[in-house]
Image (cartoon, rainbow, N blue to C red; front, side):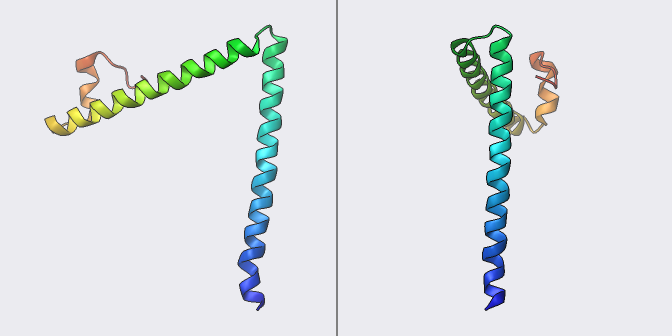
Length: 91
């Protein structure tokens, strides 16, 4: 029935749109890499930087989790713990 075909058609259209969006993002990233390379960066340096950013984010996530658990134990918000540990809200 036409009604049962509509979701498939809509799903296919959504997938096509998502594929095109991913292609645009891929192209933008390629252009950004080319720009960085033209500025004198090399791929190894960029890969190391990305690796360090991932490590930083994992450590930050673990710290946030610990702050959250401590806040629950103390019955306060995590925001209230920041001054105690000399943290900025932007950290």
